[in-house]
Figure 1: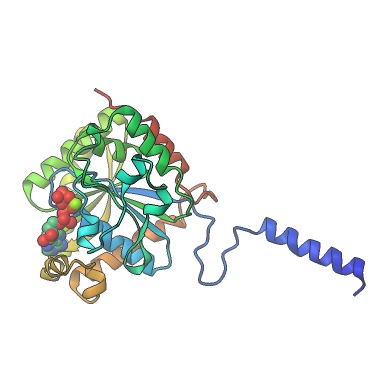
Figure 2: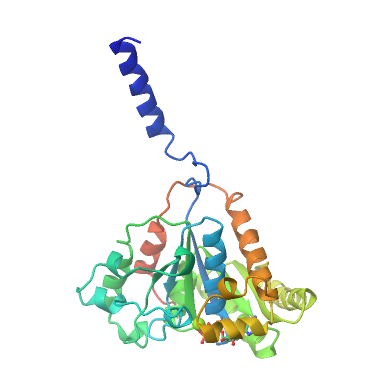
Length: 305
Ligand SMILES: Nc1ncnc2c1ncn2[C@@H]1O[C@H](COP(=O)(O)OP(=O)(O)OP(=O)(O)O)[C@@H](O)[C@H]1O
Ligand SMILES: [Mg+2]
């Protein structure tokens, strides 16, 4: 091959590389996917949000996805406790200017990336408007790409929780068969629908005795929100009540890591597969693997009265 031919072949391959940046390599996450920002929330507290966030993140990571967890329960941070990690720095250090947002990200089990919250700020409301703006601007400076950003919110309808739920791409509402969990979930849906025009919700039935009970929880809530609010409630699956989960909490490790064969572990795996399968059918796949629009929405969010 002469020099001119070699040059044009090299040039062609360079051009091909430039054009084909989206082409997935073997074993690599195809990056022609849109990052999915999913808030994990509930009406009633203590229904399993943090454990679901951690185990879904773990399962998705094991499937080769790059997963971030944002501990949005600012002030009552639980993710680090449940994973037995002591992040040296958190969002507070970013706000004070001591640290860059990229410096506080910690790697958890299965290489889940965690954005540690602070235990010093008891509520977002305690941050003044300028500090809130600063925090969201800093979050948008995260320079890593991701497939999933799971946002573990607090329970209820505080401004902070409403903010994360109404700005996420998808909402996962965690409900147990307890009547108060169901009525509180209904209240959350009602507020997010009436004030923030959210029309789609996903339900996870947690701590159920059987697959049938999970379905029954979904059917009951679905009927009410459909009849009274004309809302689409989709079923994301169920997690069995499992003593192994309680044990994993005491061990401060993800259930999937310590008891991968436990009944609830199988539920988490099935749910992660179901969730991830939706990614390939999502319309208008973008090459954007940073949640730029989400950070932007967070920054410009206003509470509606
Ligand atoms: N599927 C399950 N099987 C058995 N126990 C469970 C299950 N899910 C949750 N629990 C129990 O509920 C407790 C609370 O779970 P978790 O901390 O995940 O709830 P949460 O919704 O994040 O709470 P908070 O509202 O305080 O943030 C766990 O420590 C565990 O003991
Ligand atoms: Mg929690």
